Image 1 (cartoon, one colour):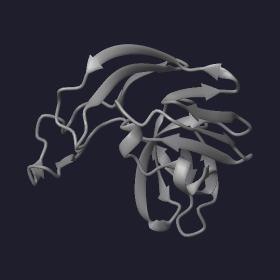
Image 2 (cartoon, rainbow, N blue to C red):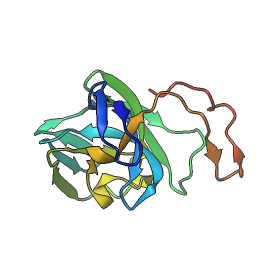
Image 3 (cartoon, helix red, strand yellow):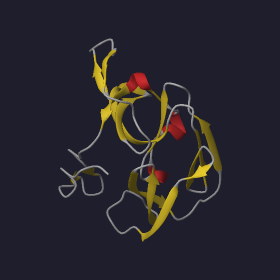
Length: 166
């Protein structure tokens, strides 16, 4: 999203800001030495609500299209359901478990921060647990899968490497 000076992380050239639906690389808030990657769902000032597996941004439900049972490789001991989610211009698939529909969580994204969530919603370490990501932690926009490790098979997922990120 811009060019930054090393060490001080001062932005010297802006190439835009993250947009809702972008897949973003950032320094992990709990360990800034490690990079993390998640989808941007909330922009500064947004109210983000996650209720019964449905995302609401500023009071409006995010469009979901039912894609049926997920049959691909996944690291979940319970059945997964696939939906097509539309965040602004960006359409992408998400996975949710078919059980545990309770609860509502509500967040207001502070200025200078971004709310991020994983596409495997019920198996994701994201802003719902550790809060919004500071713009000071941004690394850049992700656009290509350069490596994916299949933990079940203990090997790379060769069919995913090199694929463009939706």
